Length: 287
Ligand code: OGA
Ligand code: MN
Image (cartoon, rainbow, N blue to C red; front, top):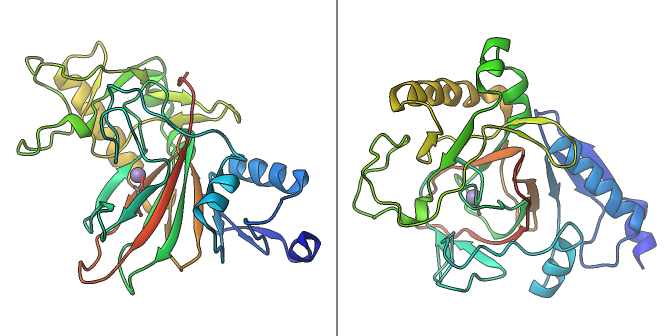
């Protein structure tokens, strides 16, 4: 019975710039409305939730995830991780074995689906097998990154719009660029400018809505000025005071707010297995 589970239910904020750990909750069971509301409130305040000791079937994982929103489905003409034309798996295998995605390399700080018109509100990543070392994931608090900007910079960026170019339409043999200087590159996928300073749709908090390495362009600024501004903002946001480093255990589910955080993954040894499953939830048009 779930009453037994709830006796030990506990949410403990991490001693870190974001995050809270949830113990004593079995996500395969029916959850009380108060519990779900408390989780949603904590996500709003702490940006990521770490659920410990979960052992779920795919169906149970989805039933749990959909308490927090409906499935993220990209538009047909906009590729994202794991999408094939017209279909994206509901549960994405984030794994270095058995045809999974993301391999074993480092992943720079990013938020998922930022280049789409309605980027996902959040994702849940469920750890089934983890390497002995490496492969930690870091989450970074973009509200804190915004709040710690100096006032002149806040004023300067207040009304700017940013295009983030879709990394999944980049030709594999071309070097990665962090800023688009070259206007002659044909657009082979639609682009969606979003505010550089985003307002969180539930908390109202201001967010520096920028990732670390994806190719971007500030609308209306000449490339020299735009790229210098972006470099300055990126060096500001890449500071340990804004992030939490998570060492995975089997049975962890991390649910992150994709609107107010970035995430980064360390590389790990390709001889080791790292097997995870991800579900992403639908979001809304950034404002
Ligand atoms: C993702 C992702 C990070 C990781 O699934 O969106 O970035 O730690 N994964 O595997
Ligand atoms: Mn990601």
